[in-house]
Image (tube, rainbow, N blue to C red; front, side, top):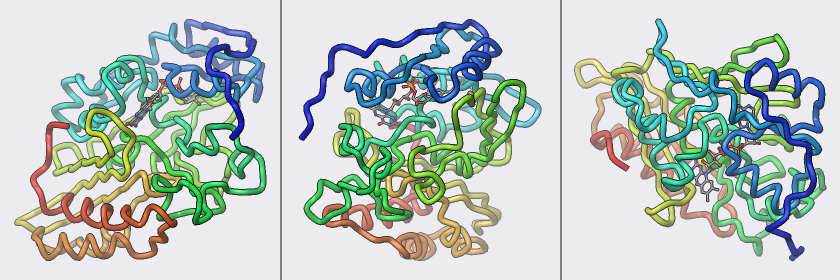
Length: 337
Ligand SMILES: Cc1cc2nc3c(=O)[nH]c(=O)nc-3n(C[C@H](O)[C@H](O)[C@H](O)COP(=O)(O)OP(=O)(O)OC[C@H]3O[C@@H](n4cnc5c(N)ncnc54)[C@H](O)[C@@H]3O)c2cc1C
């Protein structure tokens, strides 16, 4: 394996704007030479390992306006620079979207939640160790996937949606945002576009070198969570190797609207199983109009694993996903991590 240097960051030019307009102007000026720096927790690994070497870094730490979390006429708008701990503790998020607060609370460790931002959490790169250690895989511009052969270390990789690359999306907040029909507000220069969370995450079949819709010059400004699912039953659960802190092996976010014990509408989303969070529309269709009971939950679990393809070492994820989807419909909603 190639040696890595974990102490000295290669030389770069650091900009610390204190407004979003200035940050956007810098990104426009430097294009693909520039790297957006939020909390730095994903970023600094890349820089210290010298695997990514941007010429210019635009640190958003001084852009106070991007930290705001505010209630709007139709929900809540979370500034991309709001820290994970701010999402966990915000009273309106706790009251209206407790599953989002819970997902942020299960992400990483207290120290990381105190520094890491929600924007960085959804925009973070995959944790495939071959890719992160600088192997020239497909995702890194090469023409091979080191993680997919039977002899590779692929216990944490895809069981769905692989397209040459088998790396998974590691975010805990992402599946909840997709389930809540959130929207990502993105700016490039003066132009703003609003992308549904479900389309924000990009798989290798669209672009193998990025995980999201963000491209050079783009700034994720905020995340809008509409009232659509406020007050509905929204279940989040994450299974990881260590309960102190760890990335998800599989997580699930299920939003259900019920009337008289019958499921009227549903969003069922899993992450940690594919290069993007996956909305399981076949499960949603199977449970809509059904009573919320053990039988419906079992059926949902069985439908959820249709089309899965396990690698040599991650077959356990198939059962794990089936059980998480089943529990997300059957069990009481959890409020504590
Ligand atoms: C040890 C460890 C354990 C972790 N465990 C978990 C876990 O269990 N669950 C989980 O979900 N996450 C986990 N994480 C990930 C952590 O939550 C993220 O690294 C963190 O949220 C990234 O946020 P950041 O603010 O530090 O982003 P940064 O590292 O600064 O940025 C991450 C990426 O997003 C881009 N970016 C950030 N903000 C913007 C923006 N506004 N516009 C455009 N691009 C942007 C950056 O350019 C970069 O590519 C872990 C991280 C570490 C180091």
